[in-house]
Amino acid sequence: MKDLKKAREIIEKAGFSFVGDLDAATLQPLDEVRDMCRTGNCGKYGKNWACPPGCGSLEECRQRLKEYAGGFLVQTVGELEDSMDWEGIRDTEARHKKMFLETAALLSGEYAGFLPLGSGTCTLCAACTYPDAPCRQPDKRVSSLEAYGILVNDICTKNGMKYYHGPDTITYTACYLFR
Image (cartoon, rainbow, N blue to C red; front, top):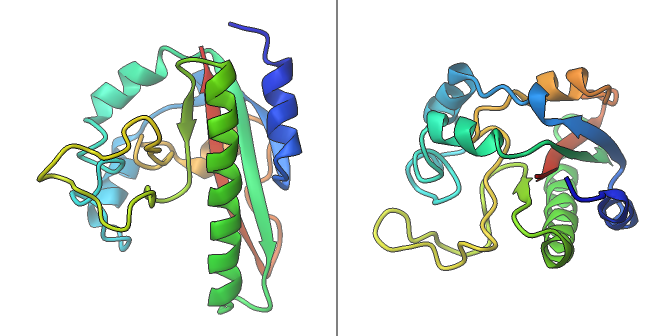
């Protein structure tokens, strides 16, 4: 695995609330998480190339993950006025996705073949072409940890990172994996 000191520096400069090491062996795709995508309320299952089934079967995701030795978990934590602060939730999500995608673009210039796994569905295009036409931006498309069957609380715990940061907060977690 290529020296990741520079990758960590790039990620830390991005402005995430927390950055931690990620052991790829802790990434255990679960059928139950994939089932949450199928029955979840985001409504993107079967409607987005970055979501199931467009991102591949759970077995295909498992095989892809085996190519990576480790990486970094990143979190963006937002302070909310209360649990119903939808504006604060949306603002934190937008800030997280912007940092995450900008950092992924920087890393792609240094680390060929790294795998970014984000939070939530891909939102690069106003409307996804799935399943009627190929993805317009396959080199920038990012699947979520959940789309890969990863239970986010589990990988945070296994890698020594808090998942819950207290009342009236929202946390978005993602990762960058390297060969």
